[in-house]
Length: 419
Ligand code: FAD
Image (cartoon, rainbow, N blue to C red):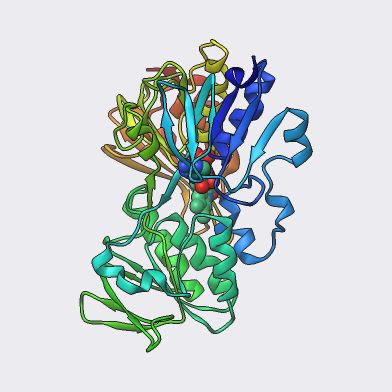
C-alpha cells in the first residue's frame, strides 16, 4: 500500500545490509529502503585494519553484496543520506535536508563510532590532517596516504584495532609505537598470558610497544595542520608523522533515545531483536540484550553478532520468532597469527592453556566453576569450531583433559555432558 508498506533500514553496514536482504527473503512484500550515511557500496569492515590497509585487498573484494544482488532483492539503497530524527508516532524518518519518508516497519542498524579521546587531550589535533580514528573506508583511505616506509606512526590504544594496524604498519616499513594506557594489551578481552604473548610478538616484529602510558596531549606544527608529537603523562615526548587512535567505540543510539526507545549503552532489544517499539527492530553494534548464556546484559561488537541479529530482526518483521543467541565470537589477524575467540571471559576464575605458546599454536580456556565460558584459539581453526560448541552448549570437560594436547578435543566433546 504505497509508502505505508515500506520497510526502512537505517545504517548500511553488516547488520543493515543483511537485514534488508533477509527481510525480502523472508517475504517482506513492500518497498525496502536501506539508508546509509556513507557513500561507498556497503562493505566488510574487518579488512580495513588488515588486508585493505596493507594494500592486498581491492575495494571490489570488500563489498558485502553486489549492487545487482540488492537490486534483485528489490532493496533500494539510499547512499550518503543521514537520518536526523525518528517520529515513531507518525512512523516517519527525517533526513538532514528536511525531507522525510514514512514506514510500516523500521530497523535500526546504526552501529557505532570511534570513542573519541577527551577534548582536553585531543585539542586541536582532532582537526589535523595526520590524526585519525579508524572506522570507515574513508578513514582508511586517508590513513593510507600517510602510510609511507620510514614514517613514524603513533598508535593510541593496544586493542584489536591498534594491534592489527601495528602489524600492518611494521610490515609496510613504518616506525611504529603503540601507546596503551592499561598495564597490558588486549586487557578487556584476554588473560594476562595471552596479552604477554601478543606483546612479545609485536616487540619481536619491531614495534615499540609501551604499556601503562597515558597520552595527555599533542604537539602541532605552526600552521596547526599536522601533529608533530605526542605527549605522555610521564613527561615523555614522541615525535611522529601520523597518529591513529583506536580506543573503542560508542554505540550510535541517539536517534533511538530521542525517539523514546529503551536505550542503555545500546538500543535495548529482546531475544528476537525487537525494540521497545512494536514497529521497530534493531541489530548489530548499536544494540544491547540480555544474554541467557551469561546471565547479564551485553553489547557485542562483532560481525557474526551483527549478521545473526539481522536475521532475527528480519524474521521478527514478518511476525516470526527467531532468537539470535549464539555464543559470541570474534577474530583478529596479526602477522601469521589467526586469533579466534568464542564467549566472554569476564568473571572467569580459572585459566588453562592447551598447546604451545612458543610454537604459536594454542588454545586458552576460561572457566567459571566447572563451565568453560570462553576460549581463545591461536592458529587452531579446528579447535575453534569445537570450542564454539563447548561454550555454546555449556559442556563440562575436566580441566586435566582440556590441557591434554594429546587427546583430541573432539573426543572430549563426545564424552562431555551438558551442564
Ligand atoms: P556498522 O558497521 O558500524 O554500520 C553502521 C552504519 O550505519 C555505518 O555505515 C554508519 O555510518 C551508518 N549510520 C549510523 N547512523 C546513521 C544515520 N543516522 N543515518 C544513516 N546512516 C547511519 N569484527 C569482527 O567480528 N572481526 C574482526 O576482525 C573485526 N575487525 C574490525 C576492524 C575494524 C577496523 C573495525 C572498525 C571493526 C572491526 N570489527 C570486527 C567489528 C565489526 O566491523 C562490527 O562489529 C560490524 O561492522 C558491526 O556492524 P553494524 O552493521 O552493526 O555497524
